[in-house]
Length: 147
Image 1 (spheres, rainbow, N blue to C red):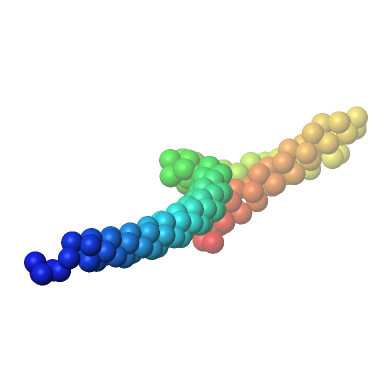
Image 2 (image 1 turned 180 degrees about the horizontal axis):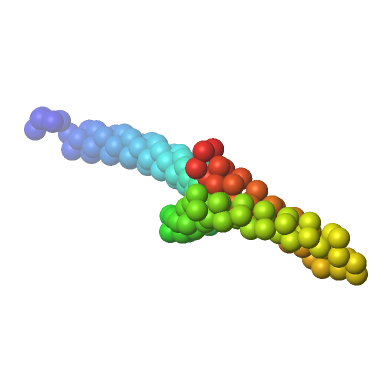
């Protein structure tokens, strides 16, 4: 602007510049508003997606916790192992075999006795029970330590 120009021309130019700046400012405000709205929408979508992931992870954690609750602890497994070792020693097996043999002898001697059918049944059940117990111990031993 020079001093030669009339003040009315200068005012017109300034008003035109102000009008241009006002229009530019209005456009920038619109762009900023749109950018903020888009960013807010993106944040909401991301939060929803994260909530779905969190829900899925929490369900998985719950399933793992339930599963872990059904597992035997190290102390429990060790106690079972020690019990089996104590019960499954060769001496225990030999004693069990001797007991079965003595029960068989008792059964055989009672076979000839009249009126002892009840005691014969008792001896037979003792033999069956001992054999089943022995078989269970052997299977348990092989299941835990061989399989």
